[in-house]
Length: 127
Length: 123
Image (cartoon, each protein chain N blue to C red):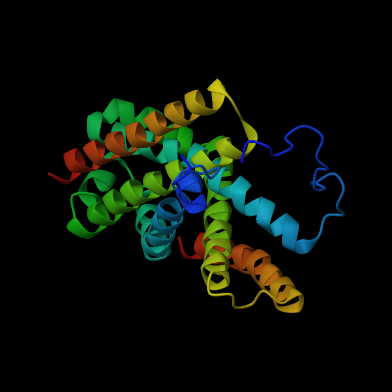
């Protein structure tokens, strides 16, 4: 173990070398949506805390969440939530070594992108 | 030393130290969230936009309150494990540990505040 050459090794190519593809972009988006959801999640927790505290505090938090800014964050979070759920479902399927062929993976990628948009719009219509 | 097998020398020295447990925990919480997230979206969506009394009345019902509590609990646990991987991939050295600690405090802090709020609304 100690004689492993740690200095002058060739490095495997990374993001800047590859042309963006559907499979890589959908994978990166999974990470971005998952982590960005912290913003919407903290807003929802704040709103719940305000509702549990007092009427005046709720009025403040509710005004922020129902403002154009709150709408923008919550709408974005809704899409991120559906996207991350569908992409996560795709990962759970992939864990069984199913659907990894390039053609199927590309189709699944479009399904995740399209499905997340459809589910977001459906949710907005229903709510 | 000479009596240690190669495997024994390697155990615990992988980049993630305990990758299998982490992977399995992510998988379990993913399955749970696939059920919880749609339930939460539609219950929370029904409450949002209502007035103070409406929201309080809505979350004093058991189903929306339990769905919200479970979603926040499992969701923030899942987020904490996910953000840990994000940090481990891009940050190294002391800041890696500091950021993981900070995000652990944020995750479980927010989850507890949410649970406290829901308990207060529901009871």
